[in-house]
Length: 287
Length: 286
Image (cartoon, rainbow over all chains, first blue to last red):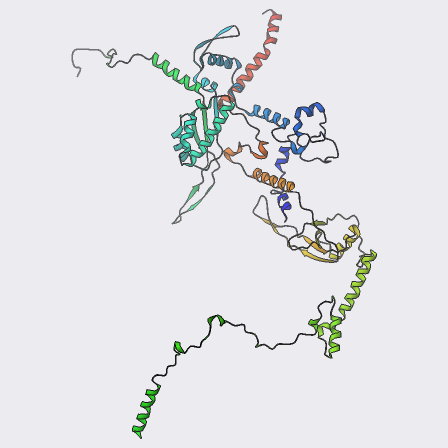
């Protein structure tokens, strides 16, 4: 078998090749043309060609398939943008626009969300009281999910407890010099989180690990553990995932403010018992 | 007498006392060590024969006729293997072959087999390491014999197959896709021909090889089974053709997503229907 035949030889014969279908999603990059260069390409509209840019055209002014890349393929980018928008999980898909608007106004005014504030909107006055759950969801967050990791929950939890609640950058710094495997995995995840928070326009320096947990990733392979005296056991090959919620400095400020408010509202501490006696006081012993 | 004997034996003993079987170093033969050859070649003990008469003929294509003549001239009986007249026939055939080639006629007896609407395929294969440029290999249907291929090549392409050899490959065991069984694959028949003129396959363009290699890697990557969290992972192949820079997700619990989407739908319905309701209430004077 020569080199070409080796590469052409399909790996999986009866199944259709998946990548051709995916490739055909982009209409500007046809993989196969029945007539090759004999027929002119369908998109000869000049305005359309100018839009797509001169870089994909060859010297004769026709679209050159080899010059089309992922970066300059406008149709592909459009498709990706639509798909990303549809697939993305964000709170504005699940909460009424008014609530969102009012929340944003409070945040704009104070720098973070304060519950029970009076807001003017559309010529009306609102007093916004949100439940803790709603506040948590409305504040900006980044949800990270790892891929399948060959480890166990017990091993992962040790590392998770180490960095839970830390600033993301501090956590990355700590994890980088920790020799555990799960530290490396978590570090990768957090670095991805920093990138994503930058994409959202959040300050990466202010991000912290709000919650971090691990779980079984399911479908654990197992095999027999043969022992003496006719006994046996099962050896499990465990796989886990990591999940993490990063929150911004907005949340940190709010929590600090709430703590302060709670402190202000609390009664002064009495070192002596200052409560009324809860029994009838009589000058003799009752027994 | 006895005393005489005793004296003799004692004298003998004295005289022999200094005789040693082992050679002393001073008596060793004087030889230069560089002149000594260890394990000298053992030739010379076989009988050296004079070269055979047949060995003297080296520059003739079909030599047995010449060799026979040499033996007759020398007055010796020719060996049996030079006696048949086959090389006279071969020479005649060779001359005939050259004539037919020069005349542009088929160099063989054309077969009379008639084939209607053939749907078999004959593939020219790339050469393997042991083939010369004067050879070509074809993948042929199993019911074809070497005469058929010779006829076919002559009549379709005008190609002269000067010699045809057949390789019938064994059918390989193949594994099933979805079971543990193994099955017999097809039995392939290949034929190698000798040609009058050389033919070298053009080199495969590097780009195509690379493309195929990449495609193969992609196929391999896509064929990998995904389990658990890897099912969500979008492959990073083709410079992010599939992935496409996804936007980060916020944390919204699945339960809230379920209820929230319904409530938001209701809300949107209400807002969209408000002008209509206002209109109706205005019409009714409510």
